[in-house]
Amino acid sequence: MTPRQKIKFSCFMIEGLNSFGTVFYFNYLYFLMRDEFGFGNKRNLALAACLGFVYAFSAWQTGKFAQRRGYFSALKLGFTIMAVFLAAGLILHLFFKSAALQILAAIVVNIGMCFIWPTLEAFSSDGESAEQLPRMVGIYNVVWATTAALAFFIGGTLIHLFGYEILFTLPLVVVLTMLALTFRLQCQSVEMAREALEASSAPPQPHQPSSPRANTFLRMAWLANPFAYIAIQTLIAVIPGIAAKFHMSPMFTGFVCSLWYFVRLGAFAALWHWTAWHYRFRWLVASFIILILSFATILMSPNLMVLIVAQIFLGAAIGLIYYSSLFYSMDASDTRGEHGGIHEAAIGMGNCVGPAVGALSLQFLPQYANSGAIAVSLLLVCGFGGLLAIWKNVK
Image (cartoon, rainbow, N blue to C red; front, side):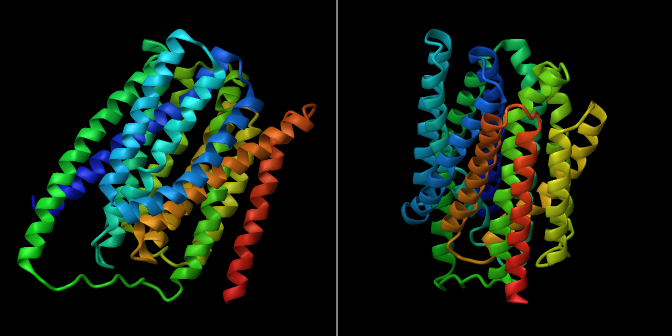
């Protein structure tokens, strides 16, 4: 294995671990808030909106930090923040039982995570040619989607076996492992840079986008991806409520409601190897339509079979929308740390707006059980209109 391959392998290892730890912690945090503090859909949605707002602002800034100060500084700072406040969350869970303090700890863990994702996205893509970039983005997406699906699938079982203490201890161990791997990765990177300097004095060539419409598709993807995360984060926040409606335990919920994660993983694998969707508007617009219909169906599903089938369509739609945003972000610029930050900030805005709309609907229209689902679905329709407007203006 060449030094460059070792660096990429270490980067993907950190990415996979980070996805597992953060998905497990943040997805099952809503179950903790339900079971320990009595949070229902409305308060969990409000919590999700708060975390999304913090993530949107922080990711934008941390992407700039990674671009200016270096990837390793961003990774080490992010993992340190996460470790300290995961430990604080465990102490609070064991000894203080304060919802406000637990939320504060989660917010700071969230800020720490903001240093990680833009950096890893840029790191995995840096130095790649136009021919190799789709492959790197494909590997990146498959890696994080695999461990995310695994985390949600087994997360409920882990809580059933070990209690809610595992919600903090397992991610804490994962974060400390990633911090150690980061120091190792830094050593590998220094070695590779020295070898490259000795081998050639020619400056690296700037990356050229693979399509003249790259910036247009980037704008559309940056619009579509937040709306995908409006659906995702709204769904994640109300999964405890869906579980209660169908009388599912956290363990059984992890088995049933992780299906869309695995479908998204399958979509990532397919889109990695089949690239005809690149810079094709019809694929992006079709995925947006499916996103709206499947999201509304899941939240208003009358039985488990409808819930399961709708997840298949949701996972496929989200797969293409997210892949589009990340690929176009990496393809359209050489300042990938900053573009990764914008990509993640857009995700944060979706994470904020969707749950906020859902929470407000439940606050002001509590007599309508599906008011939150309908309101967020109408918001997604507005996003679809924005997508069509961008495309119409450049045709």
